Length: 446
Image (cartoon, rainbow, N blue to C red; front, side, top):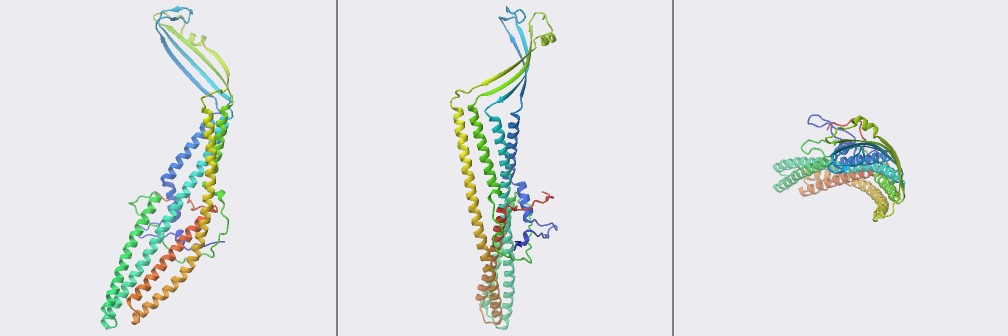
């Protein structure tokens, strides 16, 4: 079912007076926010850490190669490396070596570490998406607040203009004798109240705009103009949900699932430490020596070549007792699995509750919106009749003030219902897998 949202200003751009710059739509505000938000940047760094851990886990399957160079001086009694007898001559020793080792079996610890790292990368990606969606929700709500106060400011300005017009008419009617000074005083008080309300709404609008800038991480000193045109709005054709929300599509649920998967592989890796490990290696080494104050019988090149030797080895390591370190690690990772499973169940319950609450709020907003629309129409007619009666001398200025204030409150409540319905509808669409915003291919310059 195709719905036309009542606030088409979210998707329609308008030109501002200053500099004729294009006003910011809600999608542009959200896209700017997810690019500059601090929490999103931190989540990107966390994802990069997960990718680094995965790279390290992949490298664990490769052989390790080491090269070594060493040197030492022997003073006093020592063994002559050439004659293998004791000598008191100071001797300089120099050794070189290259070795490589490769673990063949380690209780599947490397395999499980790699699977855990892969799950962490997927978890990090979903965590980044979830953080972007949280920022998008905050910006959307702040954007709607700005729209509310912007439209409410237009309402009170229009009412102030009407009060100024009625004040002028009342003064003219006093001159012809149809009204008294008390009516003029009452109309002046009404105009002063409307003027105060305009000032108050302007302050609320500045506060809402500042809050939107904070959510976007937008410079507070710079001007931010948003699209505020809402002409020719069409009411939605229904209030029902045309598709069932799917919790498995939610980034928060998928993040918790990958977290549980990573914890399970880490638990298996910790149990692998109880099994024996097998590793093999090979290397080559050589030495050089020189006795201080004694002419060397062999040159460095000859010793480097003649003293060279190769070796290979295989090692079987059986863990017997390591002061309960392995057992403690297994218990800790097992608790992490239970903790991740509990977190997944909690995320699902929270999401289901949010979907139910949003569905109920959307339905309530729809019904309230219909009732408030009827009330605005009735209050508008009542205000017109009251003003006409006042001009004819039938009603008092207090009646006019009461009718116009009631109409203003009804318009404000209708606007609040409309924006609430829009927010809840977009949230339900989000729970069905529809993105909260559409990312443009060409971003606005920062």
